[in-house]
Length: 88
Length: 335
Figure 1 (spheres, each protein chain N blue to C red):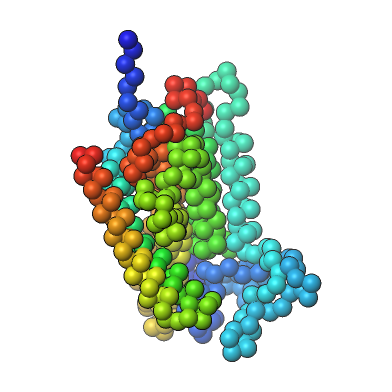
Figure 2 (figure 1 turned 90 degrees about the vertical axis):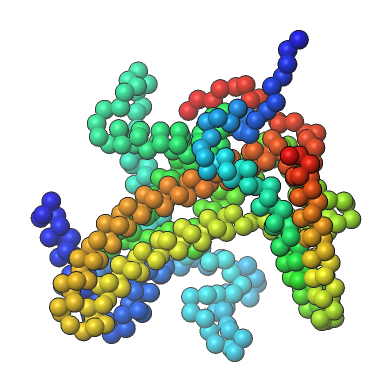
């Protein structure tokens, strides 16, 4: 019975990849996790600021949404890190 | 070689002399590195500056037509209009067209169209082959992979040579560096961004790509997580835009400032130091022109490769792979 080899990054065994490409690919999930942490707060603050301007409710929506954004960012970060830990 | 060096040094000195006719050195430098709606031809040691006005093309988007853009205090912002699409031809547009024409001419002259002769003959053809092979083997394959890499070589080669020609054009007297313009580098980065996303969609399938944008969290968190992930997509092209623009602009400003030192310090003896320094920076800029084209292409290949890898391993982002790659990896690619 034929055993199918697992697919490697780039559709090959990945041995031809340069050192930079290998390191960047290895770091990518961690960079993505950190971006979730930062991005959550950024999206919350900017979204709240914009909604406050539109609905003239300042500064309440910005305060609430920035807190929500920080919490979601933290959750996304921890979720990603625990998944990466399990994969190891 | 010595004659060429003397010629270059005289050219620098003449440019510096021309700069002396301006009182405001930083203003003069800024005027030369930013885009403008006319082409200037300065004759070294000659008095008048010949300017060729370029056509202004404004397409009105509103019924009332175009109006000058105003600041909050009601002051007119020169060069900016409101209510119309500005398709005016500028100095940098001309430089881009010139780079494209030179690139096409170079490729037509030195590319091998006789398929029976596989060995390139002559210095030009060998140089082009060396650069093409470098982009394919060292940039595309080493960053994307040997099966997926060759697919993106045509784009990477186009970007490499176009950026290289624009960088080199900026080092020729009377020309300008189009890559020192934020709009040009942003457009180039946008091309890389589109190809990167298409590579991701191709590798993961549209479903897998969209699933990746949810960040692998519960659906009720998507209203926050989707904007976070979408915003994250733009960080890479933003870095690509800024670093090419800043590197090219900074080099030219340094070059001009070294010559401007003669007039800032106001003594002809400064020329003995600043002209050789400017010449050295000019040679460095020649090297930088190649390095920046290489870095832009390398980063583009790296981002495409990361997108392809993420598509194949999109459980990295918390989603088990349900959607298989939409293409056959067994096929060999030829260029």
